[in-house]
Structures are given as structure tokens and as C-alpha cells.
Image (tube, rainbow, N blue to C red; front, top):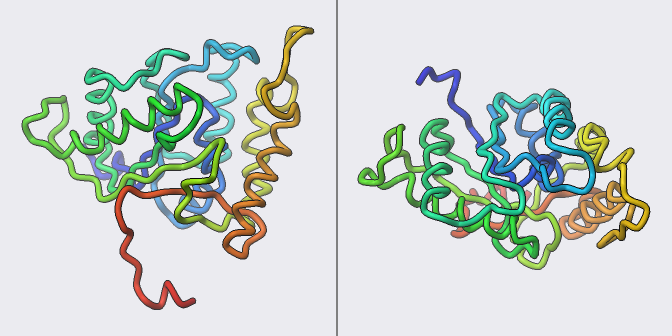
Length: 237
């Protein structure tokens, strides 16, 4: 593969818009620093009450342009049917091998949403399988350096956070690109929200809460399976 097709960061998102919700500010920060970032959605959001697969595909294109992504793909595993199976693990492992990204992100396996939880567990396994030469996929084995987890609904397991104060307003513009989800939802008259109806305000509160934990206005939280090496000057800044 030509080096221009490789990625520095590969993000797996259970549904279209999950990567933007969980780490949109971090993506903007990475792209601005010159990193090549790609997102692979695991389904098309076809079961969502708001919008449909075609509408959400157009929204994904708009959001991807605003983020400056170098790649956006979809494994189409089925909305509401994302499962941690060996077949799906191999599909994710092939993507890790194909793009040879040293840094892989996925949704935390502790998320209460069954699709999110299965996605986290599946990519966690794929990250390991991708490095094994005897696991056969189209691309050769590749050992990524890190598998990190972003958060969508809870923050109990966050172990580090990224300051996105300077990127937050653009992140909100990116989320507004998903108009069917956050701006002009077309809902049945008896629809009941699980949480607040103003999801953008909920995201703002969430990012502000995480920011407060690290002395920033806004931040996005993450976790790692293993210790992250940091230089002493980084720690004591």
C-alpha cells in the first residue's frame, strides 16, 4: 500500500456520529497537528428512530469534511446487530492491518448500549488478532501500539483526558451536520426520550464535566488497556 493511504489514527464507531460525539474535538486536534485520521463506522444507523440510512450517509459526508478526515468507511455489520463474533473480529483486524495505524480507538466495552459494548469488545479482540501472523486476512499482520477507548454515556472508567477547549465550538458544528439526530429530528408524536431532548446541550455538559477534572473548560475522556509511557516533563507541565 502506498504510504499516503496509511493512517496515524484509526477510529471504530458503532454508529454514524458516535466518533464525533466521543472524540470529535480530539479528531480536530489530531488533524490540525498533521495526523492522518480515519473513521470506520460499524453500521449505517438504519434502525434509528430519527432519519434513515440514506439521510445519515449524507450527514456522515458533511461531518467528515468538517473534520478533515483522510478516510471514512463502513463495515455495515447491521444496526442493532453488532456482535463480537470471530467473523466480525477478522473484518476489524483486516482494517487495522490495511491502514497500519499505530493508534486504534473504539468505544469503551463498559458502555450500556449493546451495540457500543459489542463494538468495544470486538475491536479490542481485533487489535490483538491483527498482530498474529497465523490469523489470515487479506492484509499481512500488523502490531498497533495502542488500543484506546472513548466514552459516550459514562465517565466512571476514564483514565486520561484531552483538552478540547479550542476545538469545542467546531465540534458542535460537526455534530450539527447530523441534522436528523441533533437539529431537526422527525419523531413520532408519542416518542419518549431516554435522556434529554437537547442532546447537544447534554454533550456540552458532559465535555465540560470531564474538562473540569483536568483544569480545562472542555475535554474528552479516554481509557487504555495498559500503562501509557509519558516523559517526566510532560507529567510536570
